[in-house]
Length: 91
Image (cartoon, rainbow, N blue to C red):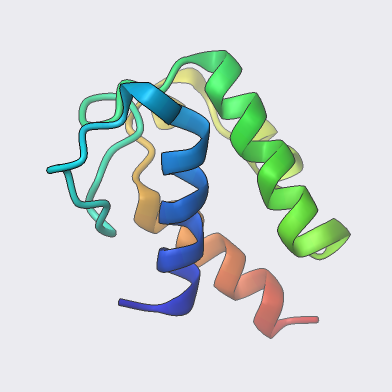
């Protein structure tokens, strides 16, 4: 498991809090909609956590704003991990 995936997975667990299913592993294929059932307020919390962790280097909100609703619904953890890794490698 990559460091980025571990970090994002930890953030997701913190954002979901008590509703987290301890038996559910977060992988690159885990979807925010179907698997995690992340609500919009949880997306906002995740965006804040990503900003705190990576700073302006990773503009998650800007990246997310380029997506249409269907893309956001189908978004997977791996999409976010790949975006973060791309941002970090190009800076």
